[in-house]
Image (cartoon, rainbow, N blue to C red; front, side):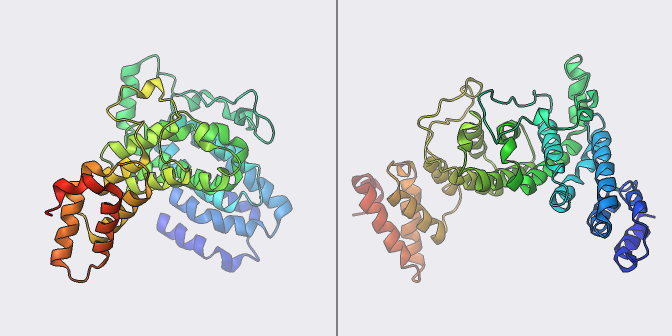
Length: 366
């Protein structure tokens, strides 16, 4: 049974002196993907005892698995096979860097779905590389695109509905893989970044959005000092603002603000809104500060949130807090009256009075 095989795998390290490393590939072909995920780091550690022979063998074996099992024609199998990708990225690429373009290409291709694979700019110089020119040609298979997606849109819609759970799980694994690969994918950055707005603009469960935002933040942290990521995709910033304006969960909003902050965005001035987004129900031209104010003021204002709001109001050049003054000021006064241990509320109120002056008159009983 699977449980017995899992227990046996955990004992492999104790018999590493006698185990035949050639047989380790059988563990990576187990019918249970949980067994495969458990076996992968142990198998790779054992393979290093005979690296010249075993590592190339296991590496080639895993690449064949990726070729045959990740295509989306079988969504359930594809999602399970993609659960191996973060493990491969974590444990193998230090010894076999040839996996980097393989894994990156799979992530980009599957996250694009029916959209064309991102183009590569003709004027891009070294060290940037076109992903389409570095992966094994075996990946160019009809299985990576659903043959009926355009021929029969109704059948494709049924396919999407029936396989939504698998597609979401697969996307989570793909973004987790990109996050792990972030220190190594600078050369492919032109074709990696476009998959993020594609995901953020589509309807996705929170765990997919959070996984994508974490991956994007990790990539920004590594690559943004060398290239302006904000200019690599015209849809990136609008898609982030869209997430904030659609009543997203607190966790999604938190990571979205973290990403926009890492990009150094304080406003959308100077960026042209793409035609595809001009008819949406949100305004991408307003400042990030206004999105932050809207998000923070939508619920009950705790003393700590009031302190943060006061700092934002005092340090920003715009007057994004004016529409929320009634809620903010009344909450500060109520906190002062009911909580004797809130001296910072006086400082917060002083900052707001200093910044907004006469705007406060309707809200202060003076």
